[in-house]
Every structure is written in structure tokens, then in C-alpha cells.
Length: 388
Image (cartoon, rainbow, N blue to C red; front, top):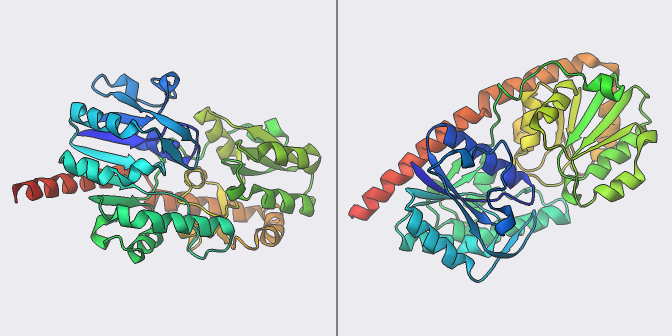
């Protein structure tokens, strides 16, 4: 199957990781992926080493012109739609899959693909919090409301959880057009194993946050709770990642508090080594979609704590982890974090349950099989429609 994948390669965010993991898996199964993304000439053919696209001689990369892009949204240039249309005509894909980059072009895609008789699939994964507990979550709710009428015109819309599906359906997207295919991880790669990270960091108990350092990730609440607790010197908190609030946080919280700033780590094996040595993974976000970092930690057998936002609460439900109220992160962490130091048996029990949850529901291989099945159904329906 030839798939025109409209996705994101930079700047780094969850959408970039999603595009890389899914297209790699599809390529490994023999599909041809043409990768279209907003980029200038310096970014073309500048993929991370673990992206397989350039090793596939039949695949092509297409850069779409843009005026501005960030981790949150993209502003295309006036020429971008023309470039996209010409590219799709030349590539002649079986279908188009757009991992939506929150761009005005997203709203034009249904009309463009309808004119070209191409079925159109979208992955819609902006973070959200159904309960609108803060300004950030209210803003994300508005994003869903704005997008819903356009998503109703896509052949299929992929979301990561049942609660996200219910939200879009309430906003007017036909239920039959929404399919739940959650994020997934490779449990063979992200697995429990030997690690020397504790010796390296001189820690007997290692707590880890791994992700972007942005306001919506609420990392400062974790840091504030950690400082307030005055944890024993043999307990360390490792912060893995970087982002717009990183410099401010580093200036206010340091090694005197038992906090280790490890920065952004591109090497996947190094990130796995950190997770394998971690006792507890903490994700204190105010909004989320379905965190890949959380799934990776769970797959490595780490005891996990995350806020009940997006689909993360659903992932950890029924004992697979501990779910926090995002309004009470500091107070709840102040209660929970010392318990792991005093009762290490909790770490082992929760770690086993976390990995089992991934094996049962969030395996990348099973999710790719589900994606292929959905592609086949969309193509079949397109053929039926064209015959009528």
C-alpha cells in the first residue's frame, strides 16, 4: 500500500515521535510511505538515524513551504496547498494519512483529497482535560470545538482513547468516522533490564520525569513537592528533557535539592537505560493526549504516577499505576513519594502491573495491525463510493 503521510518532523514534540514510530512500523511491514511535512531545504533528508524512510528507495520526502512553526501549531505559506496538490497528483498514493499539525491546511485537506478522489485519514491528538480545570485545558477544549466540523469530513479520524472519542462525537463528529487506535510501544525494545544509571547518579531510589519542559507539563509542581519533602540524600529526582521553561526551572531548583538535570537525550537506548534503572516515573501534566513517555516507562516495568488528564488516567486505571488530581499535584506527591522510599514492595507490584497493561492494550505491533485493517476498510469504502 502506498501512503502519503502528512506529518511533522520538527520541532520536537509528541507528534514528531508519533510520526516516526508509526511510519517506521508501516515501512517494516512493506508499505511505501511518502512523507510530506512543513520544512525548508535544510531540513529535507535530515531525519533521525532511527527513521527508516530514507532506506526505502520507493519512498519520497516532500517539503511544504511555511511561514512559522512551533511545537503547538504551524502557519503554512500561501503556496503550501498548491505544492501539496501537485505532490499528491505525482505520488498517486492509495490514501492520505494526516497526523494533524494544527495548521490552517488541516481544514482544506478534505476538499483537496475529495477533488483528487483520495481517501483521507487523520490522527487527531491535541492534549485535553475533559474537566476544564485550568486555562490550558479550556484552550485545548476550544481546539476540539474548532476542529470538529472539519473532522466530520474526513473518512476516518484516529484518536487514542474512548473518552477522546466521546468528546469528538459530542461535538458533532459522526461516531462511525471515529476509531480508537491508541499510542503503542514496542515491548521488546522498551523492556525491563539491567541498568547502571543508579550507580552513575549515586542514587538508591531514583524518581524520573521524562518529557518536554513546558508550562502544560506542570513540572514545577513536581519540583516544588520534591523540595518541600526534603527527601533523603540517597533519593534522586532525574529530569530528562528540555523546553521553553527549562532555563527558569534549572535556575530555581538544583543539585542541593537532590535534582539532577539530564537535558534532552536523543539516544533512545540511553533513555531506555534510564527508565530501566528508575523506581518511579512521574508525569504531572495539566493536559495530555496519550503520553508515549508514560507508555515507555510502563513497558520498562517502572511504577508510574500521572495526572488524570487526556487518556493517561485511563491507561493507569484499575491498579496499573497511581492517578493524581491535576489540581492537587503538590499535596498528593508529598504524600506518595515518601511511601515508595519506605515501601519498595509498592515499586515492584506497580511496575509489574504497568508492564502487563502495555502488553495487553498498548503494544505497537497490535496497534499497527489495527491501523492496517482500518486502511483496508477505508479503501474498500472508497471503491464502493466511486462505483455508485
